[in-house]
Figure 1 (cartoon, rainbow, N blue to C red):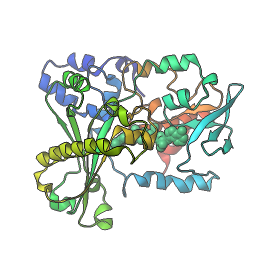
Figure 2 (cartoon, rainbow, N blue to C red):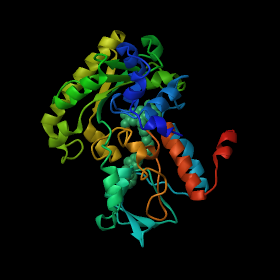
Figure 3 (cartoon, rainbow, N blue to C red):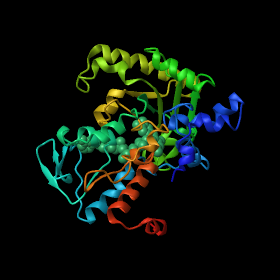
Figure 4 (tube, rainbow, N blue to C red):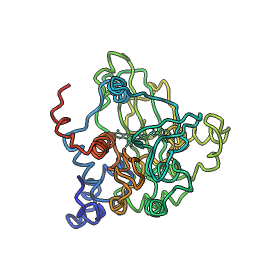
Length: 358
Ligand SMILES: Cc1cc2nc3c(=O)[nH]c(=O)nc-3n(C[C@H](O)[C@H](O)[C@H](O)COP(=O)(O)OP(=O)(O)OC[C@H]3O[C@@H](n4cnc5c(N)ncnc54)[C@H](O)[C@@H]3O)c2cc1C
């Protein structure tokens, strides 16, 4: 768990007490894109968490990210659970301050003893609870924390294997310079400025099953910052129907991101078979994050002070889980699931998980 002494301080406050060397300082912060905040803004708690997580190298699910949910389906169904996809919750049904079910967008009502939401604290408290049942203390608390950054990403498919292209398994972080805070501030203020940070990742190179399933091919992602409000004029339009101006902006961004990629890995030139680009509006459309935020709530020191970001809410039988109650990341979200389960069962199940042998 996060040590409050550190989570209350910014990454800048802690690291600048250790070194005055600007280059070393920035190198120590180079993974800050994983939580989307620069050193003067971020809580040192999350920085330490992310750096520790990566220190011995990270992990990648065999067969790709989809295998995470595939591996859970059987367990859920074996125990009488049901999985519904493309099934939006309209609101949580609350009677006498107790959550008793959910009303789905299609009108179905589903009742349960406990309601658990991983749709994010903002969605849960401000959108999924009817306005007349919302509590000022939740709204006031959440207003202290902004949504995290939004992004643009290109998903690149190549017609040569990772081996042929000599693609690495590690992630690459590219920064404009060593002044992360000042450069980010200028970028956010300057409409249409190019992202000061790029992240390049190689999902196929990390997946041991990829060469068997997709021989002679590889996949790369390139991600960069892109403020949501720069896309606001298309916000009200439907997915794939946002018109030629939107498509033109996407095309321009695609070229900028591809150029960055070619500059970093010139050997892939001429091998790109397909390139799809997502914008903050894609994140909003597919994941329902209101401002296209990539990582839920911003990881500032204030965030880790909020008692609203815990499994138990101030509505009986309504629980939160997911990244907002711990921190960004698949592992954090999974651990949040465990913590929420412990709260509901009132029993520490950690030892069972620690002893589990697949
Ligand atoms: C491009 C990108 C790359 C990333 N890369 C990595 C990585 O390499 N490693 C890593 O550890 N983390 C990564 N992350 C972060 C990671 O994906 C998140 O931290 C994690 O998925 C959070 O899990 P969660 O369950 O809290 O929320 P989510 O995964 O966001 O799940 C919330 C779900 O709630 C659903 N929802 C919202 N509203 C409703 C509603 N009204 N009704 C029904 N459903 C609703 C959404 O559709 C969504 O499926 C990445 C994130 C992004 C966007």
